[in-house]
Image 1 (cartoon, rainbow, N blue to C red):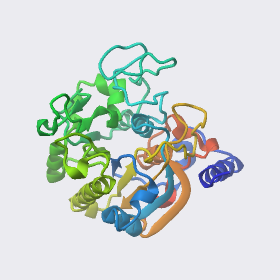
Image 2 (image 1 turned 60 degrees about the vertical axis):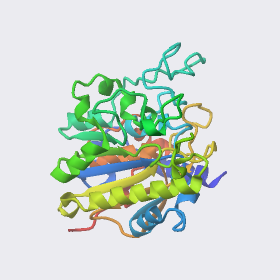
Image 3 (image 1 turned 90 degrees about the horizontal axis):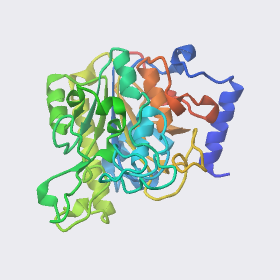
Image 4 (image 1 turned 90 degrees about the vertical axis):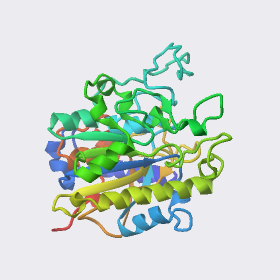
Length: 366
């Protein structure tokens, strides 16, 4: 048995021996996770743990991992990207295992629905609740900040800077497959979508005015999230084949985002604030995974060993946690941190090894 499978099996066994926990978070007293006022999740793309946790390669991320909290055994759910974002917010991949557009359904001939003729094709519009729905029901706020989004609330599938275009197609600096929230029907149909699906210009304003939400998903564009693009006008450090340049560029962006949030008044306040830096999936097509993944399921087989950092204003310093976690674990932790009454989907699967990231979110007296 590989190390990650053994870690998940031991975690699941411990949960069974403990009697398990139900899907109602309140019944578990939030499993020791403190109450948080603000959590910011920054998502980068397609890199393995071993590629990033090296000061010579990604000095900002490596330094943050050493100074704060490092989840050393964190995994994605599937390949490619899209379903991992959905899993983080909804507790399931909902059968998605491609990067087709959020509006695609079986048999669709619309643009960006290239796999829609395949047997068993999943509806890419999800009609189940997501973390944002839970937060609104609890009187809390959420926003998604997406670099290069064309306009607030945009339904674009891709968008970007025309100077990067190759003459035949636009360079997809923004890609809705990395949105997560746009896959959910309640977001697509939200009359206030333009107040919650925003660009980095809105993030700048909200930082300056103190209008930051309780929960924010922050996704840089494909040049700045280590994904990369390809074409004659793409900058060298955004070129897909230039892994060193991509990682260096993304590392600088992550470092800047973290520093700017830490410079805001809320970081010095009494309330608990966390910044999570994670990735969607690993660099290859390997199937490392844990915690409610199903190796034989095409949409939930494990998405690789990925870096995940937990940076808190009142919590752990220099902590390395080798507990097996994935995006379902992170969702469960967020639900506990915001005192939400239910765990969505696989976030409730204690018997399958899904545990909250309690050690990494623990806080000291202040």
